[in-house]
Image (cartoon, rainbow, N blue to C red; front, side, top):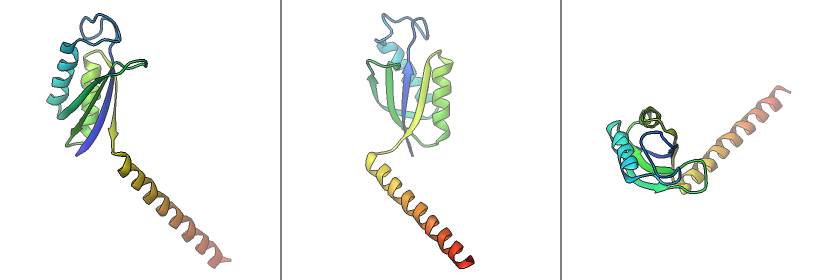
Length: 119
């Protein structure tokens, strides 16, 4: 299962009528949620994001990593600027960073040993 975050910019006149750029009508985000679900995403939370380039944030999950690309395509097909990113919990990310550092350090030590043997 893949966790994801999708941010969506709702521009005036795009994807329907809205009162202002920062306030998305419930019908708009509900429609996007339904479209995301049609392509295999499960939306767990929807947030209005204030004070930046994006207006909505969808958090959810999908069984297939390709679904993240479908989500972007759906949003863009509806006329919205959107970005979808895979997301993992901070603790899991910290473990990945540590594991990667160990692998890279091991690679450096192996190369040094090879160079020393050649000399």
